[in-house]
Image (cartoon, rainbow, N blue to C red; front, side):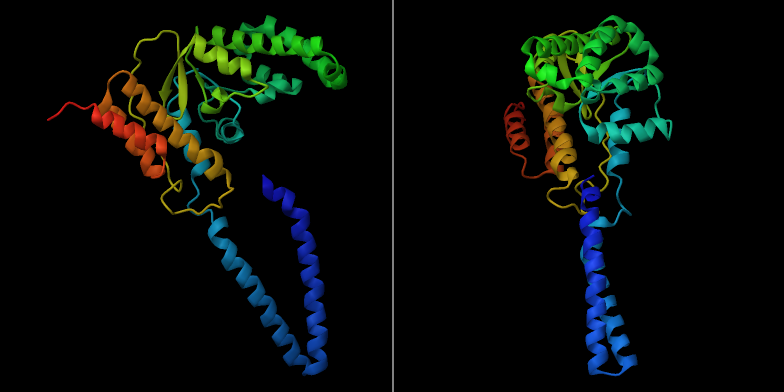
Length: 315
């Protein structure tokens, strides 16, 4: 999304380059023949464009860019029919919107963005997309929506009033809790990794979810289990085309390096730790090695690999 904000700068540079080219042509006309001056100017413009093209091509070539497609496929391949996925990661929500609404892939999967639950218009979409989800938690949703619409009408009133802020926060937490507890009766509920990161807005969720459910790593997400026994899952066959194989290049601040790749590696580490917790160290080693394939310098994977290897029975 950042490139959209650069557009005014690009336009300004293009206009400046145009004036600069015109100025160079005028100078060249004074010092050489008309035809020669335009030939030199044309060559200069072409060389400048070619240099910019060559310098930016490796980062903008999308011929081998399968990151978003594989991300969605890896997620959907894990989720069971009619499952619910809770997330606040736009890198998940955005391609999921396209896959489900345009390509009509896995329309049975319910994807709910926790952040968008703070906008009343999002509930219109949820009513259309997942009417049964809304109906099962209607009481808590309606209560929260009343507070949310008041906040949208006058956010300053909530900023000035601690009781109002507390009221809407409690209503939000109770609504999310209702959605999870009601949906898990009918189909599995999953969450993405970043929901467990403590922050001011979702501190309740980061505490309530792991206290109430066992987090079972499955692929790139956690399955919320209602008991503490071991839950097996097939080994994930993650598609990682272009992610770390060198076929696509990314800048250091690209979202792939900042968010997507860490999701893959952290969930593989979580999978390894889960197996190690239940003394399945052979499978834990496989998960840790897969994480190191994507990021050879990942300390958590190296430590987990060493610990599980040390606990293997001697031959």
